[in-house]
Image 1: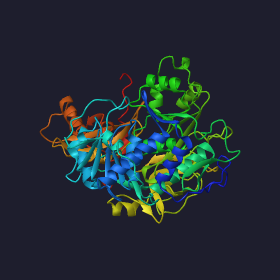
Image 2: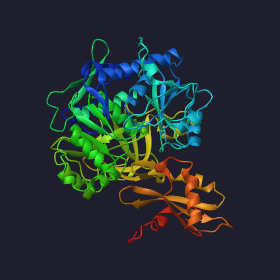
Image 3: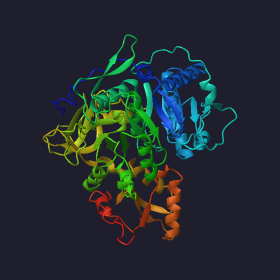
Length: 561
């Protein structure tokens, strides 16, 4: 379904210049120059400095033999230097492989083996990446810590090159980036060993950013005589909640190894927004940053906002500068939504829907003052984005009928790295099978009704029970197991395991702790199993499948806990 209405006074079909990310970066440097692009504690980079850093890094990579189509791993948390490293990598014609620096070594080793990068950018938090690197990863660049990411030193090889050496190189002319070059491999499934790398091209990124700029800013992309991309405001398309290019301050917490975090950061750069980087979410620091920097837009996940609303004396703080709050990854309840509006009285709170295979965004709620989305909706399709609700046979369904969400548009990727069978399954005739269930109302608003394949969401992270079940089953004390999502206030759902113990093992607290530690050593911190219950048998369907819905009924938290 597509809407025939205009979005912020703009037609739903937009122009997408046939250029690469180098054109975008040149445009923001020319348009916003000495305006601060990134802030990390007391340190900052202007838009011109950001472009200069990226060009120097790209020049160094090219001189060291990194060429078009090569892959470069980036194991860094949110910090001042990430954007320059990422943009420098893709300006060199290479493909960035952004990984979670906290991922266990064994899992990172699997990812590196699959992606086969030839270079690695490390950070003081990236010791596991050093241990996991392959023999082909001869180039190692050491990026210093910052206020946001921490300044501690990590163990590193003597051959690691300081980032300062790259930034001392004189930038040289580089080949123009082609729109269909793969810019990065976006990991799915919470960056686990079983993750797939989505092939995100320069064209995909720019399309999604142009769509977001039209939606949020009422601006259109255009090229000047030098093929430099700029944003032009459409007269009459702005309102009090619009992100006017070259103005505004964004508070950025989403991790850059996550699709939403990376695309959020790039979109802020595209619109000339000053981005204040924060590390781990702390409610008090979050509000302090809003007051100190007069933040105009912020984003997050429901679990974060629940913690924020629990902050004592929140109503005494000055958050009047905030004009938009965006959230995704999980639905937010109406009580919390009302509380957010009470606190952020000058802001619009907007939800959207997307996934890694669509670069990031497919839908967003309108932000115009006179257009409110129905409660529970994730908004309307973005410009040039088609979404259909289909039944099990692939037949489109009418409004109000629930089925699988299919999508296509310029932001939708072409497939997965090194996974032709999975690509053929998910990407069908130009359409993406999202695996999510939803429906449209009569007004074209999309509602998410469930998650296919039993995915659960913990603190905004997607977690797939199948992978945890496979790991748990590797332990000799486990005869059978299954993992479900258990609702818990403030975090969404926790991974909750039911286990049938193997003979000869004593069921109790010691075994519970042993199993939890066994899994924790093999996954990222947010993917750990949080609770385990031992059972003697599982409820089964007539065809021998575990009835997980019945087990979920036994995951409720005791009232006195």
